[in-house]
Image (cartoon, rainbow, N blue to C red; front, side, top):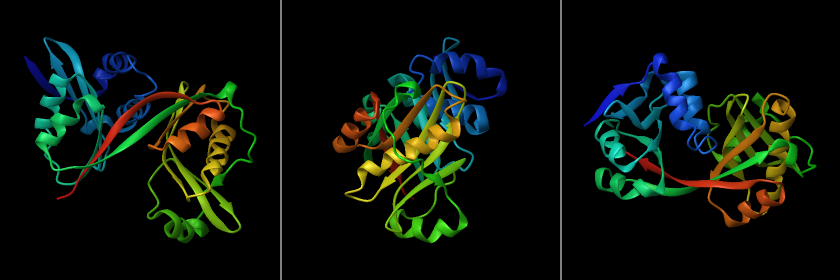
Length: 235
């Protein structure tokens, strides 16, 4: 019988082993548990972890990994009014039966840093003076470890947030670009490698699904890792 247990530090080893079934797709989930897992839940069945619902400190972003049965249990435990839920496409029908969501596709690509073929100059870290430009181009600035920005002709054309970093991988999220400047994403990637290339082995990038962007990333040495669904629930 399925049981829900709040995540604690004593669960970290078993949770990590469970997430290693798909390590790169689960890069951000692992980071949420490591850095601020106190809001997260584990779903057990007969004493074995079958699912993990990772919840960020602000309760705004929920990431689930596990089988369909454990997702049903996790979905019944979600009581927030407004949030983003990231799930495997196989669980979409369950989520849509539980909540009124808007949805979008998220592409996940992985790069072994040693295989990177790009040669763009690295994007730089965002500064206070960039906030207005970011707002004009992409909206509110997300809260990440570091946000990288790239300009062309004094206009911000690309940005990306470093969501997590460990010895295995660096996760890039909130990838933004101005239409017609998709290639500027190579500067964001170069920026991440410049900052963390000596500390990790891979770059894992999460971005709104785009066949054009997928092709650009493949030309830079990235390989397709998977696809997840982002669901947004309003009050």
